[in-house]
Length: 243
Image (cartoon, rainbow, N blue to C red; front, side, top):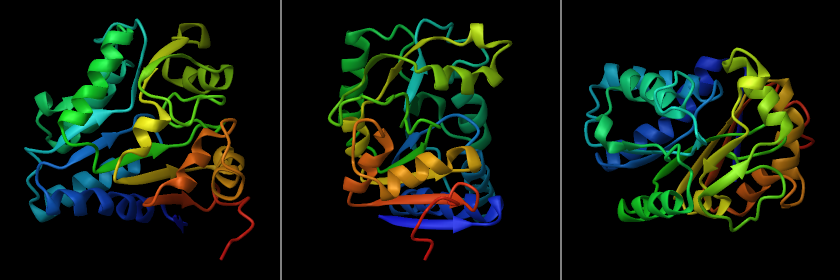
């Protein structure tokens, strides 16, 4: 496990994006796991900057989003179908048909089909991740099995409250979702985990320095052979081993 801490968000974004760019340069049809929310935005902007400045061909890059709200209209501006298209596909110039998002139907059949699609693509080369305030990866809330697969889940109250900023009110936030499981995520060849802000510091410290436990889903990254934590100084502020 590697941990890097940055004072500047632009530097953080460029370092995080370098792992994605490296994978694409090695294989133009690389498979990238896509996270949503505000945390990965510096990475996506730095990736787009690298594409523009270096003339990197991303037309064959394949993508799989981590999760999606259950039973939301896929055309809703805050559905992850819309967010991924707006903040990743259009920004980077990816080929839309090569980027998949879990179905809003969130059925067991749709979950199995998503797992099969990832496997058929050869697995994920680089998985981009954020950490929830309660330590979740994707929508794997505390208590999720470490070997869990893609499935329908209920969202924790903290997650609903945190995501309320994207909706008119907390009452408008969906309460269920479909998410890749922790076991699915761990099969990616590299994890790039981004955390920004003081509100993530407790979860970051527990994930990196605490025990591996289902109550802190992000702690499973300790077991991955190629996990990189990319933090700003606020998110890293509670780490004991600052060196």
